[in-house]
Picture 1 (cartoon, one colour):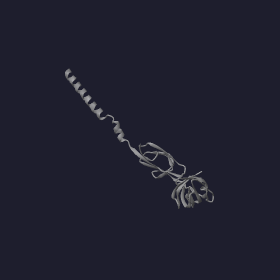
Picture 2 (cartoon, one colour):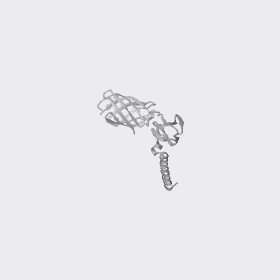
Picture 3 (cartoon, rainbow, N blue to C red):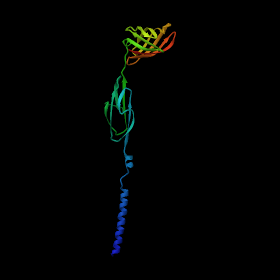
Picture 4 (cartoon, rainbow, N blue to C red):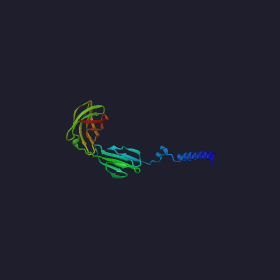
Length: 214
């Protein structure tokens, strides 16, 4: 083989090597980052946190990568009891970790502590308004109302049931111009510091009532 033929052969071989190298690099290149992201598996965690419960995560639905660990922790707010935390309808500890191997649901709930009211809760001095008039009065252990001061006056009795409903009747006046028969229905707050409701008076009609214990 002469020199010219050898040269042509080398050139052809170099072209082939370059061509095959380009094809190999094109077919074997690394996938784009977007292609990798499309292949990642994610799962959802749906959380429901009820009244009387504090903690994290809060209510909502979030997505997590497969195998990711999600911590949770819940506790009771004052006035509530019986904290129950469930993962996929199975009761679990109030604090723990979830491995995101599939979609999960997490729920935290509690119950209101029942409040029982007695006549002793009425005993004391109350101040507030009846309609547009200020009033201060005291209730003794028997439920009798004693006027102290104010633009209106109430004389009679008050009783309370176990649910905190306060009822009574007596006589009522505004600006001490006239006295008339009256009755009232109020509700005491769970913390036993306030009462609100309605007083119905024969002369003046219906009046809103808002009282605070001193």
